[in-house]
Image (cartoon, rainbow over all chains, first blue to last red; front, side, top):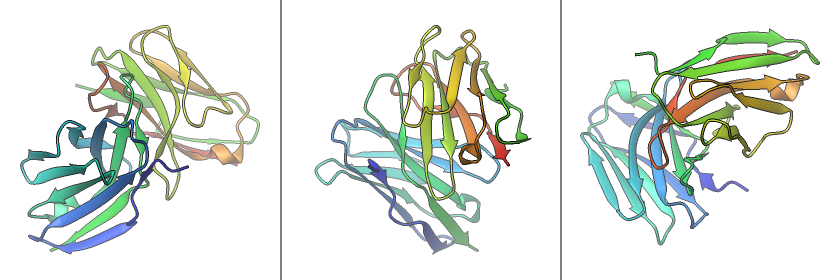
Length: 112
Length: 112
C-alpha cells in the first residue's frame, strides 16, 4: 500500500518557466511534509518542508502548497533553471521520531 | 563539516556472504535511519534508532540487523546476503522529530 504517491515519473520544462511537481498521500495522520532533491550518486538533499497547520511555504524560488482536504501537495519552482534538473522526492511523517514515507520520485529535466 | 558519512561507497558480494554497512554522523543528532532505494521506488525505511540504545523496525526489516553503537554511529548488517538485497542504501539522521533528515551519499551494494 503506497501511502505517498508521485504519479508523474518525469517532467520536462523550459528554462525560465514554472515547474510543478505533485504528490498525493492517503494517511490522514501525516502532519509534516518535505521535498528532497537528489542528484545521481549523491544522497537526497532537503529542499523545503511544510507542516499540516499551514497551506503554503516559500523559500526563494521554491514554494510548497498543501491541500489537506485533497491530501495533495505540490512543489512549484519559479523560474526553473537547468541546475534544477534532478530527481525530486516528496516525503511525509506522522510521528515525532521523524520516520519518513517517500514517494517514488519525479525526474525533472529543465532544458536551456 | 562531514555531516553523515557512509562506508563503503560500493561493494559487491556473493549470495550468502555477510557484510556490515557503517554510518556515522558528526552533528550530535539523536535519531538515525537506514533506507534502501530501488529503481522506480522511493526510499523505504529498513530500521531506525530514535535515540542511543534503542532500535526499531521500519517498513522492510527482513534480512537485516542494526546496531546503534553510540550516539554517532549506526550500522546495518546483512547476515546472509541475497540478490534481492541489491540496492542503494542510505543512512540519515536528525536532531529530533519534525526536522528534515540529513542523508549520507549512499552505499551501492550488488549481490551476485
